[in-house]
Image 1 (cartoon, one colour):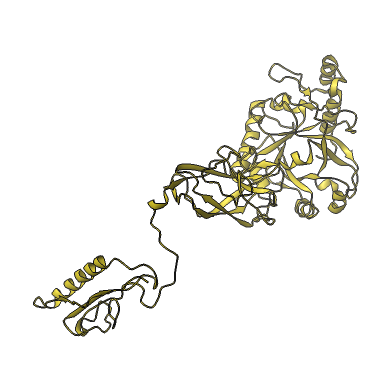
Image 2 (image 1 turned 180 degrees about the vertical axis):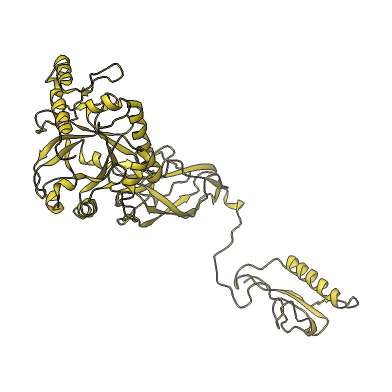
Length: 494
C-alpha cells in the first residue's frame, strides 16, 4: 500500500517463499536468518495457505502514489470496489483522499478506506485521525474501515502491538457503530502481533503472486480460518489508473460482497408502543394501521429489497395479528422508492386482531437476499429492539367511539347562551358570562357531542354544572336559592 521500500521487498519475498508449498520450513528459516527476520516460535505459529471458494470479485486499493484517477474508467473496467487511503499515523492525511472518495462514489464503485497503522503510537488516537478526515455528512463508505497492519519499524512487543490495534478498532466501533477489518500479511501478523483477539473481524491478506490465476491459496495469519480479501499483486493494470496498482479479489460473489456493506436504520418515530410499554389493544376481527419512520444512517442507499420483517424468530409467521395487506406472511412492509443516505422512510403496515390473547411482535429490517440490519458488521436495530405486545380482545370489550365528526354548532356543553349548555340568569350569565334566561332560573341543557353524535350523559353534566354554580352563588349571596327549571331538557340523539 506504500511505494516500494526495503521492508516491502522483504515482505513480498518472504510471502512468495512461503506460498502454497513453494518453500519448505527449513528453507524459509534459512532465508529469515539471512535477512534478520525473526524465526517462528511457540507463541507465533506459522501462517498457513488458505484457499478461496473459487468465485471472486475484483477490486483495487489506492493512495496518493497513484495520483489523479479516472474513476469512471475504473468502473468501466469491471472494478467493483476500492479501498482508498485516508490517513497514516497520528496526524498524516492522504492528500488525494477527498477527491478519490467523491469520484469513486459518483462512479458507482463500492468504497472502503484504510489507515496505515504506526505501532509506536496510541491506537485510539490514530483512529480519531482517520475519522477526522470524513466530512460532516458522515459518509464513511460502503465497505468496512480498515486498519493496515504492516509496519515493523519501532514495533513494541506483540502483546502491546495487539493491544494498540485493538484500541484502534474499538474506537472506530464506539464512534461509528461499525466493525473494522484487518489488513496484514500472514507472516507479519504471526510474528509481530501473534494475537487471536481480533480474529472475529474479517481479514484482508497480502500475498503477492502477481497472477491470481496461478493459485488461490494465500498465506493467512494462523488466527483466521479464512480470508475475506486478498491483495495478490502490486503491479495490476487498470484503465483509469496510471502505472501499477494494488490488485485484490474478494472471496465470494458480488451478492456476498454486498453483505459486507454497512446498513443501519435509526428510529425517528413509531405509532406503536415502545418496548415494555402497555400492550396495543385491538378488537377481534378488526385491523389497525401503524407506522415506523426510520432514517438511513448506514453506508448504502436502500432499494425495494429492503423490508420490515417479523424477527422473533426471523421470518417466523405470526398469524394471530397478520394482515392480508402484508407483502408476505413474514414481511409487513417494504420500501417503495430508493432511500438515499441520510433520508427518512416511513413503513406503514396493518396489524389485525385474528386471535384473542396477548401476542409479542418483533420487527427488524432486512435487505432481502443480502443481510439483516442486525447481522454482525451491520448497524441494527437489533432483532428485538422494536418489540411490543398486542392484546386482542372481544369486540364488545372496547367501546365504539363512533365515526369521527367535526364539532357541530351545539357541540359540547356550553355555559351561557340563549339555548345551549348550562345557563343561569343574566346576573350570573354562566361561567363564561353569556346571556341566560330570566334571573333566578337555571336551564340545564346538554347538546350532542360532535353535533350529530351520541348524546352526552345528562345526569353527570347537570350535576357538575350544579356544583359549579352552587359554589359561585354561595360566594356572592348565601340567601340565593337555585331552582332547577322544570323545563330542563336533554338533546335527543339523532
